[in-house]
Amino acid sequence: MPSLPRPAALRRLVPALAMLTLLAGCAIAPPRTDDPLEKFNRKSYAFNMALDKHVLRPVAVGYTKVTPKPVQTSISDFFTNIRLPISIANNLLQARPSDAMADTGRFLINMTVGLAGFFDPATKMQIPLKETDFGITLARWGVPEGDFVMVPLLGPSTFRDVWQYPVDGYLFDPMSYFSSNHKFHWGQYYIPQVVYFIQMRAQLLDADSFLQTAYDPYAFVRDAWRQNRLNKIYDGNPPADVMLKLQQGQGSNNQNQNFDPAELLKEQQQWEQKQKQQNNSGKPTGG
Image (cartoon, rainbow, N blue to C red; front, side, top):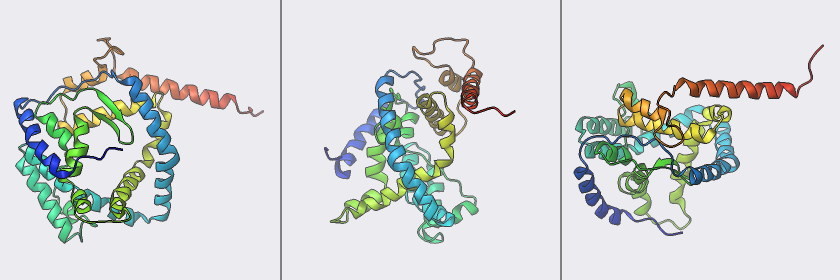
């Protein structure tokens, strides 16, 4: 497996990327709602789901069983706080100094009063959390999102959003600096990342039922992810026309301009009813 670029190389890359984004203008790029890579994406999704079924989910279930809820909360708070420099840096790149200051205040308070971030007194002090990433930074500077892509091991993304993994992960993530500046002989520097992913997966266990009842789980994940990204880009309030384009679709799979978004829910309900009828037909009736 080829090695990922180290922070020094990426530091040289960022100025060039910054220039490209500045030249792209300050308007948020419109979302692309077609799926030209669907054939590959579905295969990648199937791989990811198989890995989740046989490895990630069982580990997450075991983690929740042996880890007390207060400990899980503290671990979640720690990783939320330790990754705040990612948001601070990107808020600055997005020309949002007030959001960067809010995240800086949260980081400092939780690192001190919150005992290295294992507690979250900043929330009780009503200091807002302004999470963001490099993909959102590129979107705010008008960089087109490109095709939707289901990345093996990493999950849903786009050609634009996938840049957050090398840039945020190697330039702005304190855990990356810690691992790159300490020598480990047994791979101990992977432990924080492993715990982080287990904690993230554990937080999604309650959402598994939604995916299991979806008539097309891949499309459900793809469209839910797109809507979530739009909410983040537009601070939770995307324009109505942008959301309508996302719901209607712009690709070859759905070019009906009279498309009613409520039909998606209707289809979902019909599928669930059909599943219930099939299940009940296999059971003996009383009387």
